[in-house]
Image (cartoon, rainbow, N blue to C red; front, side, top):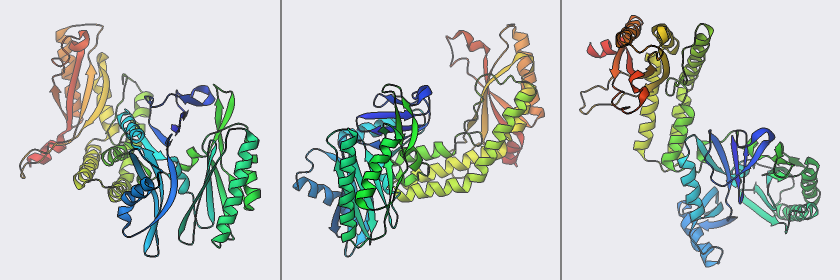
Length: 459
């Protein structure tokens, strides 16, 4: 799911928010019901290029001082550096300024979501498309931003229309095209192509093409319009075109605006969730028979194998995040340790083998509610080993006949079946924790561990 948080207008593609139309308008800062990538353009922001001498690490401080002295900012702001290039004895930066309260609100909202919420900047993702001989125009409503890089220097030009009328948008696009032609010619650039990236254009495709064509004619360069139709906006009964969902397909960790700890959390959740048995939630009742059980088990094994194959890639990604952000070393170590723990759970618990044992043990009406991993926690003391990796199995006893003797026999059979398959099952007292709930007496929970793991620690 993609959220286009573009100034005062928030659009969602995919999921319940979009409905049958493919794209929908939502209130600011909604509670997202699934994982999403948020492409953000702050409501009150400025974009520009500045040149300084000295150490690029001081860019933010020098830039804020410069902008305040020029009267361009007065309130507290967050300055984001999109790109930095060395120029002679100094350096040049492409930057975005965001009001501090809006920045803090966005970060707080994204961090509070129950699901993965990757946050990135529309201008930053647009600039990533810039290459030698290739410029980009980001059309953000009535605002147009031209990005380029030539001869070791950054280029940013912008123009804004007074309203949304098609004729005005075409005129402003032509004006920006003429300005780009003059600027790039003065820089000695005679070979240039342009990618046109509409953020969220509401109108017909032919109208969007006419706007990019107006720029192309004035700039005398070929223009590739990359806007794709997302669907019809039900509230306005018009189609919406955007190139942003396409440009975020290869989003990198360094493109995320999430704070360091949250960014690590997003990465861990994105790479590790379903893989081994991290969240092997077989929600609802797994009282399948025959094909159903086999199909579910095979799907879980496939995910486990994918995680195993991607383990080195995940480690590399964690290293990239650590390098590209100011994340502290302990946070990186925690992520690597978590990955190692998840991988060990996977190696010690074959999903298909475990599910087969649960299937055979849950005869007679026992229902398995969930199977989740439990990461081993190291005990204090250098000589002490952490307990072996385990999984927690939650279930419920048959509720059609309540008989204590029958319950005892059912659980005894369940545990014995697991033991015959090579697992130990340690009961976890969930009834006292669920006191006051009528169904609590029917619930049970076991910590399941491979017998080989336990014996290996004893030897």
